[in-house]
Length: 318
Image (cartoon, rainbow, N blue to C red; front, side, top):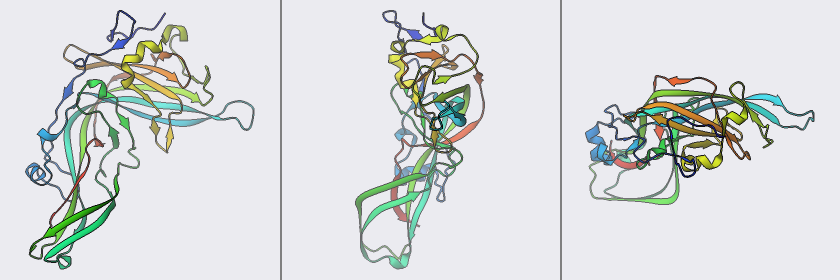
């Protein structure tokens, strides 16, 4: 017997859950006229200076899921003083809908006009930290374009520390400028991209986990027995891109050996209506449907630092 996730397609030949490419929506979102940073630009200027416009931005999954989890120390297992720790893992799997791109333009440095020569040949190594994303709630890695299976997003920074983009290069960046510059001061600018999103759904998780990698090294309270919620690993092979593991949590921790499988359910208009969860742990052979906790629609907006957009740097008159 294997638990059945309602609303998700299964192959009749082997019972695998699957999605077709067009089951999950993909969207293109506009660029906001509200530019962040200490050198904000209008859309026309962004296009003229950096070549950034809606047509050059990628399509995105219509929805994507971001873990919002944290761990709390629960104690020691075993009587031995050298025994290891176990933790509570608590929080939510949050589904967002992209709304618009929000550019961020910052000034790296200003070259005063008294440093400019009639002919300039500058050779320097770029090694700088740019706070392009100071107003972002967190930073994400998200699959752009292609299948909606990219809706599993990796969060790499937390709201407590913000999202700071760091660009380092060991190669020499050679800039050669020749001709009369008219004694004009110059700014070195960088552009990055944030993504404004709307929160649409939350699915709570509350489990305990330790590092023994044994059959009883993870558990949770309530719900049916293990046999009733068992899900064979082979039935999830086609949806592995919707799995999460080694999730970073606030304070530099992680979710230990917890594995999370998400299975979204859409209506006939491709609107999200449910999010199934299955859990597993390190060396466990199978998965188990997580059918306890709270779930349902939610509200709110956030700014996320979009790491798929590689910042561009240029020099222009101040």
